[in-house]
Length: 96
Image 1 (cartoon, rainbow, N blue to C red):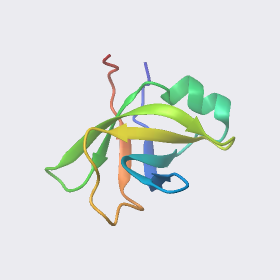
Image 2 (image 1 turned 180 degrees about the vertical axis):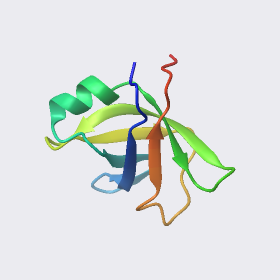
Image 3 (image 1 turned 90 degrees about the vertical axis):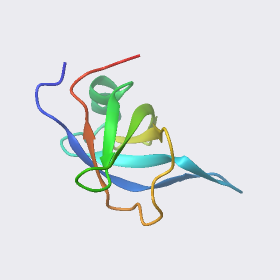
Image 4 (image 1 turned 45 degrees about the horizontal axis):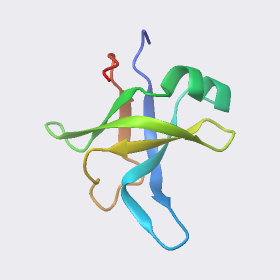
């Protein structure tokens, strides 16, 4: 169990060669700098993207992206369009 809440920043949507996946985004978390740390601390964890004080969108870390600790997050619904720079926090519980 993670004792402190990890905070991160949305870097952008997951891009394909001919498509953009509107509910999958890449995020970078503070204190996570390698692929191994990201796998150990974040894989399968629930996250929340804070849109406003009252609105948050729940997602799950589904994979790694590259070697520098960036992860892929699948949200239940898409984020609003200027999504780069939105904050993301890891929730303190892990549900299946």
